[in-house]
Image 1 (spheres, rainbow, N blue to C red):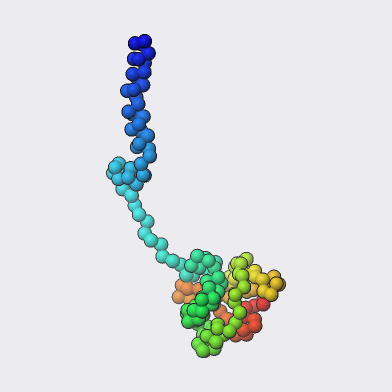
Image 2 (image 1 turned 90 degrees about the vertical axis):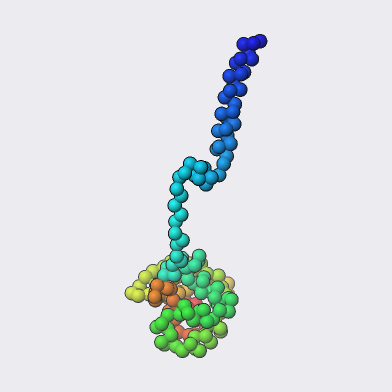
Length: 161
């Protein structure tokens, strides 16, 4: 019997090392790095880019512009209107257009193409139970996407409607 006790005693000596290993592996990695003295480098905060219409504030520019319309933030829509459009139409005309056109249909970005100085965003949508593809023209001004309007027809504000 003494022989079995001594064999079990060898395992008792190893048991504290196993427990110590278990508790060390369960600690938070940040704490381990502090204990080990390893320096952690924190990346600088990235600035938000406003010049990519495909990825604009977490969605696409068309979805962002639509959200402004749904919330009635027409003055903000005016801020995201191109200089060329503002030269063609007055602010009062643009605000009247933004308040009167229908823009509450689903938008799904399908394609993006660049042509000369403008970017064309093609959205698939359903308007009055009809599948359509609309064209949303965007230009980059001062590192920000801005909508480019060719006409102020409230029944057809975008090409393809």
